[in-house]
Amino acid sequence: MTSQVQDDTLAQLQAGKLAAVKHLKLSCNLTQFPPQIFDLADSLEVLDLSGNALSDLPRDLNRLKKLRILFCSNNQFTHLPEVLGQCAHLSMIGFKANRIKHIPESAIPTRTLRWFIVTDNALTSVPNTLGECAKLQKLMLAGNQLTTLPNSLARCHALELLRISANQFETLPDFLFDLPKLTWLAYAGNPFCNAIEQTLVSQQPIHHIDWQALTLQQALGEGASGITYQALLKNKGAQEPVAVKLFKSDLTSDGLPRCEMHANLLAGEHPNLIGIKGIIHNHPQGASGLVMPLLDADLKVLANPPSFESCSRDVYANDFSLTPEQAGFIFNGITQAAEHLHANGLMHGDLYAHNILWGADKVALSDLGGASFLPLDNPELTRKILKLEARALAVLAKELKKYSE
Image (tube, rainbow, N blue to C red; front, top):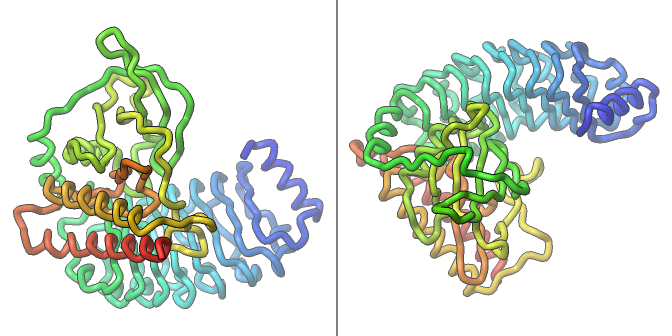
């Protein structure tokens, strides 16, 4: 959204012209919380204040009595405001890319919280009260300075997705494997697995592709970690169509671009994986990126990512359906891709329908941004980790069955 549109939205708010709106987004260099937002107390459900210069919120924010979702990413918060714990219906909180060092115990709305995002901050601990969140399904903690998680999290029996990549863990907390619903876990980029990563990758040849050999064309899609373009690669005098993924920053919502690039190298080739041609070298701005085969345009994404409401489940099109044969084809292909990754020392970590491309003759598992390196020297721990991926495959099987009956 352009700054002009955002300025217009702020002007409309200040003029009292947004009465009864349920969703408000303001990104216009705010340094203070606009008090006119309280005029929407009887209607406002989703408030997005990302991309401003805010460092605090009003102590009476709970006057927004219908507020369910709050985004304050890319601001200047150094702590999570305590008032959040008093918001009666707050189920989703996003404070990515701030400067947060401290989360008060009282800042967590324990009765309602389902989805908590504090990726890319400066946390050395998270509050024990997270363990009181019986409804917590997704917890995004990548890119902090955490060395441990509170044992109270063992009581989060609804937790399904956990991101702890790019922290300072020396080991994985044992209680994680007792969580009955934990399915999608990402932990790459921590001290305990960096040596594993380097050992595995050192055995792989790395093909560097010079930036000058690439000509970018149209964008094919954008995810949390980067933008993928169609491109041409100069190859022995010819122009080969390829796909190029450029990472947006040094940290993604799942972890480090380095880990994703290494995971792609380690994955190698398989008929049911996208695969890569090489890693970009000599980008003028120093950006990281991957060069991948350009897939058939007829391939389509199986489903859309989770919505605010579905939280941890993908959203299929209303008219989506499969034949039993198609469902079996998709599931068998993805199972084979997952088994190939496991045999090569990787867990996918984000095995979801929205990361599956399929057509009449091909099915492919994409996006290794949430992949983690398996501790192959510890077979028992590896077995526990892969049990989580088996749950992800079971979720996929259930969804495919639903849409093929």
